[in-house]
Length: 380
Image (cartoon, rainbow, N blue to C red; front, side, top):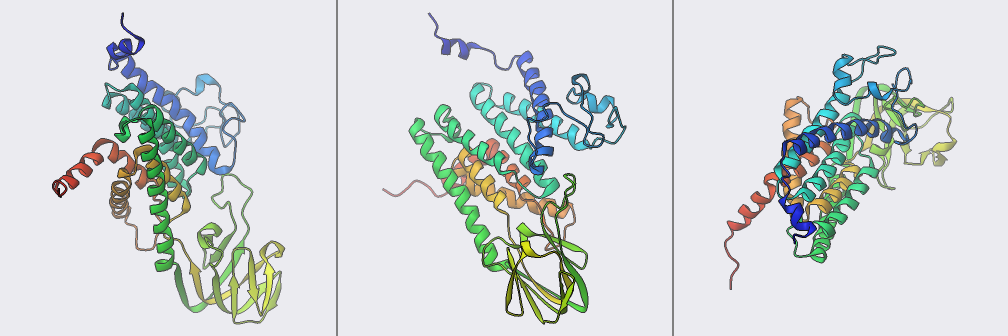
């Protein structure tokens, strides 16, 4: 008498009904991912309110106006109530997720468990890609969830890690976390040493100020900013380590509306130093002035990318780390050329890392095996 596992093996997992179901499921999941993409970086709950709403008129969207893919097309990309434009991103997320689910399901016809694992992983990466591309930030909740997913898959599946049993799977998963997180963290620290300062000099003194974050959830400025000559620099980009400091040379500084004569002002993450005095930033009402020279601390890469690489290492194993980072760098160069981005301009690295992980799933491990086969058999 055939067992339950035997019956599973006899199922035609590529039956048209199941293939179409994978696409439909992906579109539905993509609809939920749109909620996560909008709410997570703004500190909102993905569960409350439970029903989706228009960000402009804030009216609830009934279920019959929330059909994935179809609704956006039927309403010509506009809200049915206020007629405001619905960004194409909503349709793109649903379509991309549906296609990724379809691809994963059809690419692994004999291993539905592995296909489901990759489908969930792709859903998490879709959130990372679209949030990072729009706001230059990676939600850590997503990377932590992805890391936990990798640990569970290492116990239940193991095939994707080419492990010999669940213990070996956990070992390779753990090594992947260490290699991914630790490797990219080292890049961040080394980049801080090599490119950690940017000197800005002006022929004429320019205006600068500290700008408070806005309360508007749709505004990109969600943190304190240093603004000089009209260009804003977020606080998290400036102050990564306790030793980071921003040095301003000018002809005068205005502290809480009072002008202070000094040549230099040093700003740290939580305080400022002016004429031998230390003032906490939280005690300041305003700070501005004119500058002739500014030394700005800067990051080669954000910590969100480090956590993302740790997640990819957990899901794909330590062997994938080097290839993923290499492929991500090539993809970033391609994006920079495509977008005609000059040297020094910021480019989100999360989408490139996601591409690197995607590439590893389909051909990266083959490149890995081919490369090491060139070295020949080990000596006896």
